[in-house]
Length: 134
Image (cartoon, rainbow, N blue to C red; front, side, top):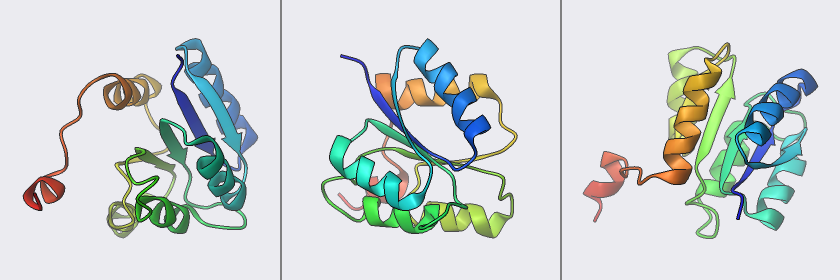
């Protein structure tokens, strides 16, 4: 069965490039163009991975990530923040909300695909903070 990736991004050009690459790699792709639609799709479809922009209409990516990561039903879904926000404070906020990866635009598409593959098709070690809690 194909793995499902949810893209939550408000720029259609970015969505189409990502969708094409992911579908060509064999993934099933869902798309939401705002935060509320993204949250609804994440809850209904329970994707295997989420690619999330920060600056979104209706609900920003930080809030959306926090809602998902602090809900026991969705906390294990990897979330990649893909954004043009490059400040260190933005990266720290992304990690604090529970994002598994923080990727800055412009990004290397091959590197993104390798990261996705690693999360969906291989054992990814737990972050040190999570391992220490056990």
